[in-house]
Length: 183
Image (tube, rainbow, N blue to C red; front, side):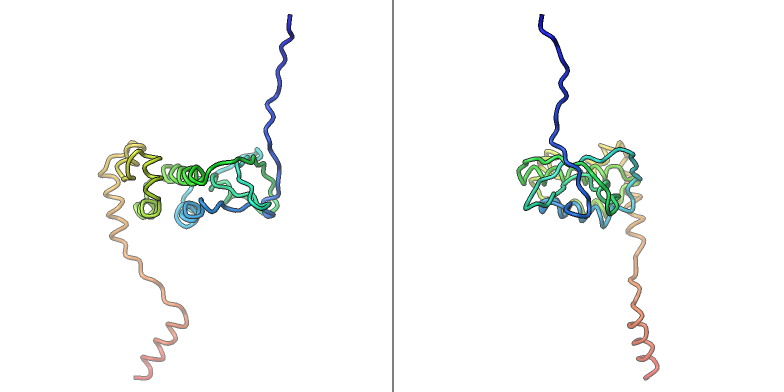
């Protein structure tokens, strides 16, 4: 009779120091930028006592991430993470980066129309087709979240009604006062 043994599946995982060589992959720059500029402050808190595992692509000794934007933003200098090196095509990396961004966007409540427009205008058409089997529409997102259209329209009207004015710099205010006093 043969003896059955349980063999542990070995994963090619390495722990690295974050500040040394973890960078965003070139195909994930735009989704990561949108996340940092629009979603980062609104994203739900992430907390985990476990070591975070990232799939990365190694390029010239640098580890390039393309997913886990929220986790990357919460990492501190000197933090140790585990990485798994993968070999993916640029198209797959781009698709996974946009998918990560869309997951973070879908977790927002309420849906911010400005973030949606930033994503829609930046996401390549081939990625939209791959992820949604059609072009990205707000109705698709609303259906995923099971939200009625009137709730989104109300939210959009709130953003349209708030016209933000840019605050002038101190030097601009001084110049304006000088101009008014010189008359």
